[in-house]
Amino acid sequence: MSISTSSPHAGFDHLYTTHHSWLQSWIWRRLGHGNDAPDLAHDVFLRVLDSCRLSELREPRAYLTTVAHGVVVNHLRRRDIERAYLDALAAQPEACAPSAETLAILVETLAAVAHLLDGLPARVREAFLLSQLDGLTYAQIAARLDTTVNMVQKYMVRALHHCYLAHHA
Amino acid sequence: MLDTAPDLSPLGPLRPASGGAVAPAVLRRAVHWFALMQSGAASAADDAACLAWRQADAEHDRAWQQLQAMSLGLRGTADSCGAGPARAALAADARGRQRRRVLRAGAWLLPAACLGTLVGAAQDSIGQRYTTGAGERADLDLPDGTRIRRNSRTDIEVAYTHDLRRVRLREGDIAVRPGTDARPLHIETAEGRIEADTGRFFVRRVADAGAVSTVGVMEGAVRVVCAHGESATLGTGQQCSFARHALASPTALQTDGVAWLHDLLIASRRPLGDFLAELSRHRHGWITCDPAVASLRVTGSFPLTNTDRILAALPDALPVKVTVHARLWVRVTAA
Image (tube, rainbow over all chains, first blue to last red):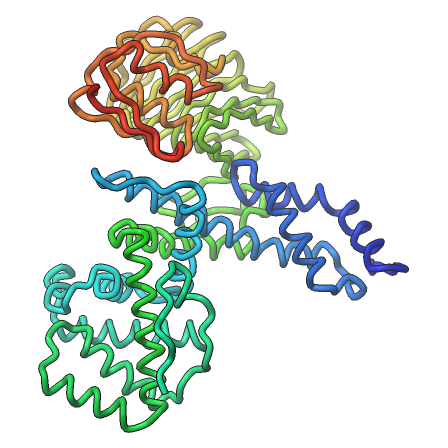
């Protein structure tokens, strides 16, 4: 069902009214709980509007779910990061919890770092972060991970390579 | 040809980088040198050799600057977020990747019978999953007429097959009114199962309380079977707790187990630490309690519709101080 319209706005309005509640339910089912479905559905429509592809849409729902999938995965990812971050922060006796605005920025930063690290095996990631976040020497990291300095060196080379390509490619 | 000084604001160097990737051969050498310089074991000779390599070609130095910027960006992240919590968050994200991959496959679109052992989460799933968030209480109406009322932070799975209705309570509290159906209804927990076809009962299984499930009957009767086989029948107004190997003797139904159904948290000389742990299930963020005051007793009936007010009122009744950081982290300490 393609959308033929006389103006871009009419096409978008039609898309929205026809599919908005359906999309919201689709998103809600994947989130598992909470009230974020309306906001995320809104995000999806904004992206569709930005992409200016309305006149070409043959399968609006397929397109909407493709965009929605990315939005939902992003959201879930940030939700997991925020939750794990606050968990870890609460375990520290002196740490001050950040304001809601700062927390949003920190979560965004962590998500950006997570994107760089995507695909690295757990031990490689751990060694890399102990070096780059905690500033540990390789000897210290080797002791911590119960391995050799040689292995840590290999992990670091692999991680640096991986992150560089994720960042610059 | 050096880049300008790296931007140390949280998102600075982690914004999309300007300047494309260097050639693979250059990158290999740059990574070799950079890794050596990060080791904490580089000698003066190493430093000199690295500098010589950097100065030998503009592309060498560009690669170096890019790696440096990335590294400084990560250091900046550690400074803003705290290294330990940042690492924990990133580890959780990596673990979540498996779950997100399943999401991609559209697994949740499949009927419960087909799900089988999909879902890469730690425990294998039996079916369609329903989770409530902090402070959220919600009803679930199933196609057979069964209504399941769920408390905050409650996690259940539903798997209806042609001859059995299964509900697994992974975490939290539910109140169940079975719908009329030819198939038996089983509520499963890690400790065993509850069999019921009619009436109304609650089941509670909270990780904080240890490996124990509790079931109480408001109307009708249920059969409780623990994992090792011991079973009992409970009638109206009875409740009992059970572990995998044994059932405790039934007692009278206690209101605190079902108070949440009326949006209440009821405490009867409950240790403050316990009370706050229960309260935190209904809120976002965390409540920490100083061990020095954790054994103080709390008594009362508290509306869950405003947990902030409950916390604000604590110092009136007990010698405690309540500090709130941005609504997300509440610390309860001695006054």
